[in-house]
Image (tube, rainbow, N blue to C red):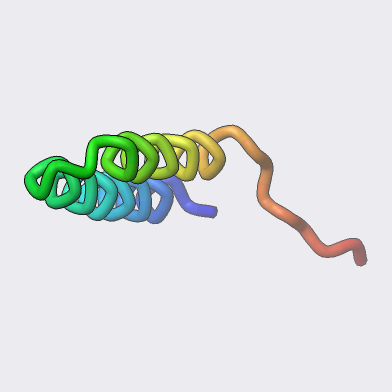
Length: 57
């Protein structure tokens, strides 16, 4: 995957995760807020660490 695309997906994922976590924290749901933020961080980590799948020719 192109680096610019990875960066855009990572940024969008982090923004959504932070938004969900902030909303959960605002309504006093601390555990779901931490889980939402943690899953967002894991997805961004996975996008950058794991290699892309390539077809065998």
